[in-house]
Image 1 (tube, rainbow, N blue to C red):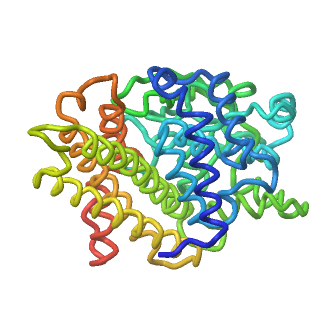
Image 2 (image 1 turned 180 degrees about the vertical axis):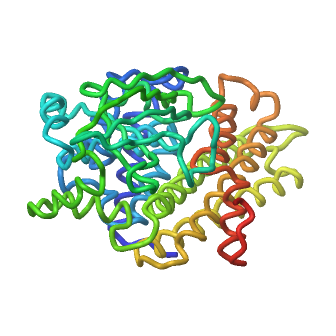
Length: 398
């Protein structure tokens, strides 16, 4: 799949920036979850070249097309997957313009300073990948919704100002989306530690009688914005499948393929490191890359890397075209590509031998990050069941 001249320029621009401006910090910065101050610092820094939620209006690379978004994700993740996750999951912060006046007023200073961080709260302790009927509920009480429940494994939760929360709307008896903010609602969070993505803060969220304006129901916010001629409402509507279909599944298609693109970036980093090491390290009087078994591993890594990239780009095309196959193919990509990233990172460690186990080399981080990829946004097993359902019209997970 050929890239356009513009896409090649984007790739090189992001690669050069990440290598020169971000990579020197990663070994230290990825040791613990980013504080809000540090997360804002890095998001503003990459925003200078049009990346992420803090890029200047109309200057973001990702807004051009899904494939360009995947290219950006690859290049950021090739250096620091934690940063890509933090940026990607902050997108609700870009929607504050369509939230209720009470929320907008509470965060006027943060919006002005471009220091708003968001998160997406879907997973629950008792449900995991079962999101059909959330236990977190929203009850209409006058001109407010009252939200009760708990979410877990939420990226950015400990540092988020605003959250996009998936709830069960008791009045309409449907799965629904609500905007909840920390200042006016006061949700609580608890940080969670994890194997990979060490720099990306992850946590639990607790909603106890949290009252939000009725206008912070996403469907209401979108309709109000569009009625007032606010184009951001139309953009938000498109993210949630305003043209039809299940909104959560529509959002998942993009998020799951985004996870695949992060995995491609990790694979590229692992392959580059392994190839460099194989051509430099010598045993028995020649570089280890001259030994047949090392070449076999490099072959396997390269094949999985290129196949994964092409699959991810193909799904980008389906998403851009609004193709009904996008849901199935995004699950196929998320499941298959993330598993391949673990295998590629594992080969890279093996090629490095004892040095692959050392924290002085980045290989162990590549492996931890790759292994983490197989679970968030739906485990590999769930992706297989989604693909199976789409192929057979027989649901195995109900």
